[in-house]
Length: 178
Image (tube, rainbow, N blue to C red; front, side, top):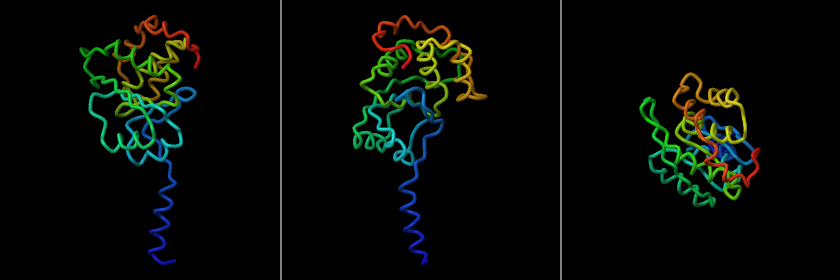
């Protein structure tokens, strides 16, 4: 086979590669989590049939990603949370409550939650969802640690533990076990 045919075959093979974003996982039916997706992840994300993305960073969404969302009819919900290791930085509960409202609204599913690495901010939101789903704290923290690994933050775990689910129980028209 000539070198030109190898190159053409490689390009066509790459078109069919499905590469999930860093820390990708299914959270629940039609709810996914990950780190920041880039253009190499777009073919994979297309297979999910996403309707929405919850983005938990302060930085503007990159233009390439916006174009992908627009081309695929995916809505972006941005809830800017500061990504800080400092103990003095509090996670704003109001922002998490707003993000949970979007997350729990089935009209937004299938949905992807992500921040930069899919560890801390995403872990806090998923942890609060798990608390709403009546998971025990040990299981919630086990899942959080699975993604955060040796970078787990006591402040995140404390936030999840103290999160007042009564603030979202008003959304109880949705099933508690999604």
